[in-house]
Structures are given as C-alpha cells and as structure tokens.
Amino acid sequence: MSKYELLPQQLLHEGTLDPTDLFQPEDVSEEVITRTHDLTYWEKLKVGGLSPSEIRRTGFPYSEQLIRREVNIMSGTLAATAFALEDGVALNIAGGTHHAFVDRGEGFCLLNDQAIASNYLLDNEMAASILIIDLDVHQGNGTAQIFEDEPAVFTFSMHGAKNYPLEKESSDWDIPLPDGTGDGEYLDHLDDALVTLFSRLQPDFVFYQCGVDVLANDRLGRLNLSLQGCRERDKKVLNACRAHGVPLVACMGGGYSPTLAEIVEAHANTFRLAREIFD
Image (cartoon, rainbow, N blue to C red; front, top):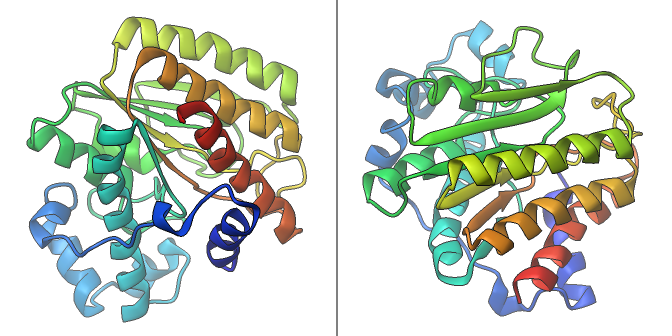
C-alpha cells in the first residue's frame, strides 16, 4: 500500500523524524519465526505450497515478494523491541499483523509480528510480563489464539463487535463495541481499561496495534471516531506507557479510508505523539 511509502516521507518533510531516526530491519533466523508459527506452515509459505483456499483466506495472491514483505515487516517489529528497551518507544511503519495464527494466515496477515517479537523477548529474558494492546477495529484473533495458553502475555482487544472476523477468538480481555461508537464512548472505555490493565498486570513491555480503521469514514471500520478522537486514543496509550515506565512498540495496523491523506495523517499523529511524549 502506498501509505507505507508516504508516511515516512511526510514525517521527514515536516521534521517529526530525522533520517537518523529510521532503521532498516535485518533478516532473522527461521528459528525465530518457527518459535511462534508451525514449521509446516512456514515451509509452505516459503515454497508456495499453500492450497488455493489457504491463499484466499490470506486475502493476497501468493508471491515470493509477498513473503519477503511479511518477513521484513516482522523483522522490523523485532528490531523495534531493542530500540524500545533503550529509548522507551519505537514504531514500525507497518506491522500489527494480528490475524496470523500459529498455522495459517488470514485477513492480509501471514506472520504475526507482535507475537513473534513477544516470544523473542520472553525466550531471551528481556521481558517477563507482556501486554498487547490491540485497538485495530478488527479483533486480534490470531494473536489471541497464539497466546491462549501463555500467561506471560496478556492480550487485550477493543474492536467492532460485528466486524471481521465473524467468528472471534477469546482474548484475555475483549471489549466488543457496537457499530457507530463515537469518540466519547470509545475513549471512556479506553480510559477505564488502561487503568485496569496497568494496575493489575504491571507489564514490563507493551506492544500496541494502533490501526486507524476506527475512523468514521473507513471502508471496513463501522465505528465513528474522528481524526482527533483517534489521536486522543493514541495519546492515552502512549501516556500510560510513559507514566508507568513501560517500553512500547507500536505498529500501524489497518487503515482503509477512501482518502489516502487522512490515513497518512492519522498514522502520522502516532509518530508525532511519540516524539512529544517520549522526548
């Protein structure tokens, strides 16, 4: 999608980012991927062995370039964890591929970047209590399934109740919202949830899926947030992490508004807030 090219250009143009703030992810070992994803599934991805129905479920036509893109996205989130541990916050221009399950892809997601990075942190004793805050309009069903038996990772998803996926998984905490939920109700739910999450869990690392498909004019959204409401959503999450001294990696997730400029602006707000709050 062109938003991934336009977003860094906008942030550099306006001075929110300097070229030195950007990083290019490096390749990671297959062992890192297969710690989270089934080996058979990964092998099929590599060689183009998915069945036609499995390909349809992903929403993408299969290509080697697509797999390279997914690995690059996942590597970016993994690399961001090191920067977040050092600087308090790091953001992936892409990422948030929360519909990828242990053994299959769905909904434009083939490898679950935040799940892979979470397991990497746990395996290397870089974190012991991870909170995944998923505020994309679609439930993070793949993430919920991956961590359903992992007490060290708490999955929180606030999403459209009647939106994709039709059959939802059980996150550790789900808040399904009715169609048309606007700024006030949405932000009230989020305020209450953040207080509960940080007081009860006391996480030592947070992954934030901040899809902007919550916007009122999003083609796939069905919620009714304004651009300012979406910005306030991000501000609340970033402020909570900063106040509790918890490192944060944010991934941009979905955004399908008919106006590309609005998508870029909504994502850019997340970066602007991170610069403002964590500097």
